[in-house]
Image 1: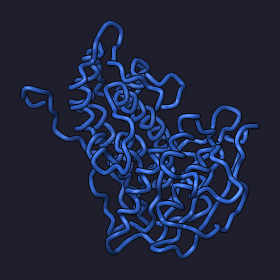
Image 2: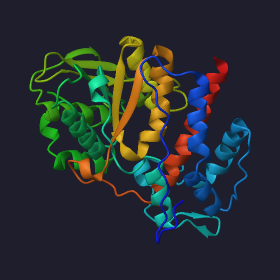
Image 3: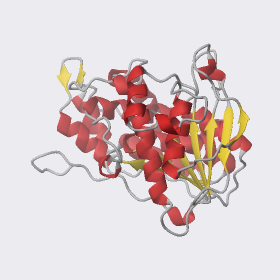
Length: 343
């Protein structure tokens, strides 16, 4: 950490995965560098953990996954429900400027340009209504140059929208882009409407499966593919994915990317650029490596939308949000490590 008036850290690279992949030893080394770097150490000490980081990387990861329950401000709620209050662990206040500085060094604040010249597929990871608009806007901006990916895929699920999200969709003008006969009920409806608005897809798509109507457990089991071939700049596909464990939870990012991959084969010549919100880039990079990169040996880069690149204002992230998503990285790293150990 540099000794300036406010905390600042040297940048720590998010693990990379080029086309063809990297040896497991190289992947794990980059994981340990992120986990054991100065930003994470500073946050751990501020949380009262000290720094019990083991010289054994696997033991270090286990310790972090155990201790980071202190940073679970979500508590099984939607991410948007995390309060904007200061982050407190026990009786310790985590300084806002420390959390933001660490998050910036860890690649969670400022967007960078992905390797578009190598990209063969562009995938947008869906989420809350306003985030979808910003991510799709960012994806559309990636297609303005040459070369550009010939296919755009948006992965989503049948999560029921909150009343606030339905209101946001109406305010953003998405309701008029709903497919005929649909209501703004699920995340899938919002994503389809936002994709149609972004690429001005006025025609009806080819549909395989059935869009869910919401409720009745559909948010965990619904599956559908909607495709608009030959759009203005690319084919556009929306993939509504089911949960891999419907008895326990709805579909997560890993389920969505895996479902897409199993029906859209990738090769070591492909490079997938996935778009999310910048705060989620580090942990979703690990998820994408697990779901796409390791099974298909294709290249994977997760790119983000930051405040400067957003088309519409969304939630301002604070210390609680950043600690929550650093925790997500720890847990995703543990999943990836188990995959590597299992061969």
